[in-house]
Every structure is written in structure tokens, then in C-alpha cells.
Length: 229
Ligand code: BJW
Image 1 (cartoon, protein in one colour):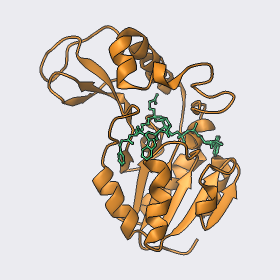
Image 2 (tube, protein in one colour):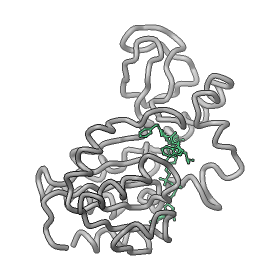
Image 3 (cartoon, helix red, strand yellow):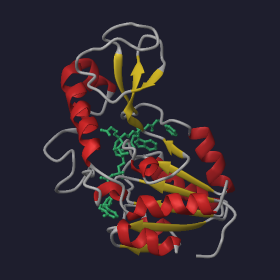
Image 4 (cartoon, protein in one colour):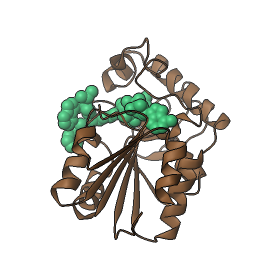
């Protein structure tokens, strides 16, 4: 790899697949046999809060049993080797980039290990169950904490920062994402419009593969360390 001035790296569920975190779509995906509308929308939470809390409580508990893989570690090393030049934007709600050593990660779809209080709007680190309706550590209101996850129809986090980096970067790399979900699926267009070299690393061609200048298809745990080297 030549040394670019500024790299934006977008990651999706595929980068954590080899760590044992299920992806969303596809035969063994998290949503196989489940309607997205039943869990990942504000309407689903309003309709059946206990079911939605339980879905996320189980996934939060499962995080303890998974570990970063060589792809997470390679990106952390790249970020450390090029101070200030590598922005990691993840759609993932796990913490494997951080545990792999990344110093700065933008979680555009929220985090499993965070709770959002509907009463005061604050977020707090959370590693227990939300299904027990605990009080908010900030304002003390009980029964108002929800998973700090961006559901369909909600605005992803840090969009201004991400878009500013995309239009300024000279390399954009998309890793382990199917290209089904916007606005992340549109990042490649934004980056290429201002001249960035765009690379896709994914197990198979994503929905947006033809928009990239370069594609490498195979497991992230092998291809990401190879790209970083
Ligand atoms: C491997 C691998 C290995 C496997 N190695 N690879 C047009 C424009 C803008 C918005 C919309 C639009 N049309 C519709 C919308 C609205 C909607 C949307 O996109 N809907 C689509 C279904 C069409 N978007 C929204 O509502 C978003 N908000 C929004 O748009 O606000 C307004 C706005 C507009 C414009 C600018 C800014 C804002 C919010 C989206 C929230 C998404 N939330 C979820 C759920 C979180 C809850 C939870 O975790 O349960 O986030 S959806 C789910 O999909 C999750 C993921 O982050 C996201 C992306 O999935 P990802 O990561 O791509 O996973 P998979 O499973 O799909 O793919 C994995 C890939 O890995 C596969 O390709 C495998 O092959 C590969 N792979 N093993 C390498 N070892």
C-alpha cells in the first residue's frame, strides 16, 4: 500500500464474523427468521419493549465471549502507524475495534455497551441487562433506558464528522459490509466524487461493488492484514 494522507475506513458486520459475531443478512444472519421491523425500529420498541431489550441483552452478554481477529488488530496498527490520518467508522455495535487496539473509533450505529436515557437524553456505559428496567445513572428515572443503537428511521451518529472526512480523504476502504443500509452504503459515492481511491474488501461483491475502483473478495481476517502490510 502506498502511504495516503488521509484514509477513511468503513467497517460492517463482516469484519467481526471471524470473531464469531453473527452478521445481519444471509443464511446464518442475526435476522434470519426474524423481521427487521420486529426488533430494529423505534416502533418495535414502543410495541414490545421487553422483547427488544431481551434481544439486545443477549447480544450484549455474548460480547464477553468473542475476541478481536487479525482484521481488527491490523486496522488498529495502521491507525497507530499513521497518527491523525486514519478514521475508522464502524456500523458495528460491538467493541472489537477498541479491544483490537484502535484508539479512535466512530460508532455511527451506536454501541451495545451503551444505554440511552429517554428521560434526560444522556448516554452511559452499560454492560448489564436493560430488561430489568434499571434507573438512569444520570437522572435517576427508572424504566427509561433503551439500547443506544441507531434503529431504522433514526439519524446515525457523527454524520457531519464522517461526511467532512469523506470529502477530504484520498483513500476510502469499505470492509465487511453488504451495502444494504444507507447512509453508509452511499459513502463510496461521496468519497469518489472528490477523487478518493475506493477499495472494497468483502467476502463477496457487495450491492455497491461496481462503484469501487478496486475490489478484493475473501475473508477480512486474511485480506485486511495483507492490505495493511
Ligand atoms: C464478510 C465476512 C468475512 C461475511 N470477511 N466479509 C436511501 C438513503 C438514505 C436512507 C435510506 C435510503 N433508503 C432507505 C433508507 C433508510 C434506511 C435504510 O437504509 N434502509 C435500507 C433497508 C434500504 N436507513 C436508515 O433508516 C438509517 N437512518 C437514516 O437514513 O436517517 C436519515 C438520514 C438520511 C441521509 C443522511 C443521514 C441520515 C439508519 C440505519 C440504522 C441501521 N441500523 C442497523 C441495526 C442496528 C440494530 C442492531 O444491531 O440490531 O445496523 S441495520 C443493520 O445493518 C446494522 C448494521 O450496522 C447495518 C449494516 O449491515 P452490514 O454491516 O452491512 O451487515 P450485513 O449482514 O448486511 O453484511 C455483512 C457483509 O459481510 C456481507 O456482505 C458478507 O458477505 C460479508 N462477510 N463474513 C469479510 N469473514
